[in-house]
Length: 193
Image (tube, rainbow, N blue to C red; front, side, top):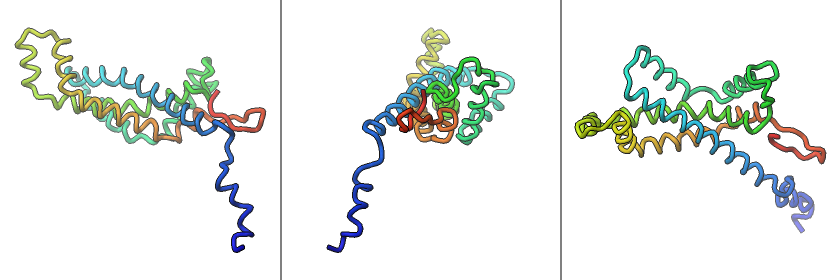
């Protein structure tokens, strides 16, 4: 048989060297951390984008520049900054967040916030001024006008949330730095707590 010398290697390709449920747990933790981080980032980013879209204040262009710069921030640098913040000597050290899912959520929150804020701001400022004027002319309060603008910008905001989720789920460097891996007593590797 021509495959006799290679036959003992077949189990390496067929049986993956993982414990039962290992891959499933990785997928669960990745989705859990990313969804929570993006949800929190959305709750933070949309009001910031609305405030920036409606208000004029000194330094507005600088804040927009910081947000746009944050979209290109390297994930490893974010991971290191969050690691310093949650380490024992850091400002959040007393909370014992190092190597936990919560630290991963913080890291992904920092990564997902700039794209969600910037794209939402672009969608909100892209709404035609006549829509705002019509809402005001019909006796709408500031909240009414904001809700009309959100309704008009909903597709752009949905795109922003999807972009933030894509940034969060795809960045491995920062999550590995702050989430780490630990060895269980059985010798298997577990991620997080």
